[in-house]
Length: 83
Length: 261
Image 1 (tube, helix red, strand yellow):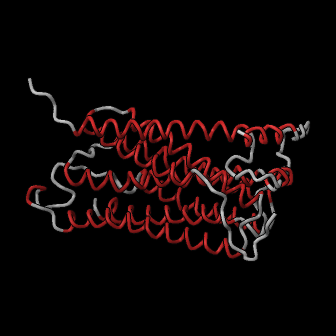
Image 2 (cartoon, one colour):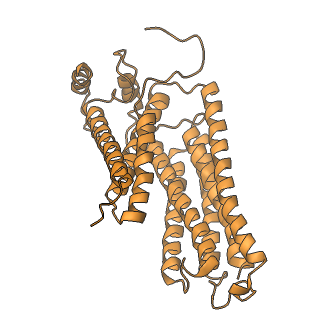
């Protein structure tokens, strides 16, 4: 939970650009600064709130799916009831 | 902050490897559920989780390299070995399907009419769309090399043009193959001819789609200035994979389409 709060802090520090959209600007330096900040956050969460949300979604789906597989395996392993 | 006294990359703890393994479990179990119980939910869940994990894992690798600078020359050398070994394993994968093709086509059984193509099969004319597809992939090999040269010469605009053209050629190939599949007078169920044709060309088509996606990601990164003229391994890996896909097609074309017709 602390890591999520730290992530929120990182977002508030980003600057908003009003540059024209014809060609993308070189924003690599900003990204480098964000991801090299010495805050102990692992790389898969270091980008901010979206990282945490995406991680939770992925974890949720995968854990649910794994449980479902084990359930279906149990069902498939049981003999079908004869009349 | 502790600094390392070596030039290798000790990665942060990450959930993607184990979640990736779980996603593979879901996908394979999903296939079994689909084949035996006609249910596609698990397969869909497996493919979705696989997609999410691939996106996040590779996103993290871009962060570790371009934004955190962990890809030293030593690390890059390891990545090069890794990509070459992976492509080699894919070559062996296709070798199996070519083996199957030659096993059945060099000694056609009496059930096939003792001939190849088997009795009743009208193969596609190799000088029509398949020849066009060959030209398209060869041209895309030229354009991806052009893109590489543009990157090493730090010509951003030309690199974007060349890479975009490569991707468009890849899409054109896929679209043409899709129409060929739709119009073909034979199907995968048409004996061993149908099996060998559609499994070999089908897996190739899947690899074209994978390669095009890899190149597309490289285009996005190129546009965002991730690559330098001296360090752009992600692009090189994509280009190697693309050349591999092209070479496999050349083998497919000369053996299955041409010799086999």
